[in-house]
Image 1: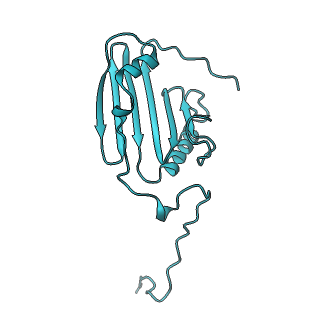
Image 2 (image 1 turned 45 degrees about the horizontal axis):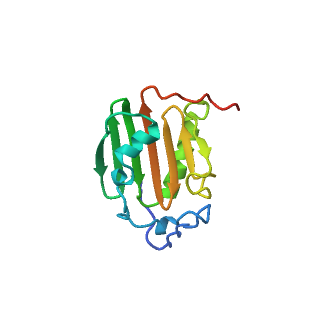
Image 3 (image 1 turned 30 degrees about the vertical axis):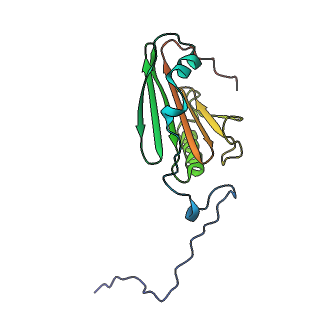
Length: 169
């Protein structure tokens, strides 16, 4: 006869280590509150400003919003512009998620120069965990930045937009 079981409640549970590797990161048990998103993506940038930034004359772009509790997305589309997307992510533990996204991008795409993330200083909060406040991937035309407990993602897909050659290594 085989008896299976688990130990009773006589042993104390080990305490969870809530000390982070970086003192700048929020402790997991103090990760922040949900529902703190104050600004919606479509309210931050007008279609006219998107056109001007892209140096694309033409009719106004159509903006479509998708807002939820801690996430706001705005897509602009129009003549000559396949997609410009702005995503504001204010869910709890944004700095840790920003670092995890960077780590995953490096883990899976480091050998591919077009998909390897390039860290950028001077855009987000540069003392964020990971070494820089923003990173860019050329293949996805994607900029990801962290600042003020939020992640900002910008993707640009525009017909005829020229890409600068890759920087020498």
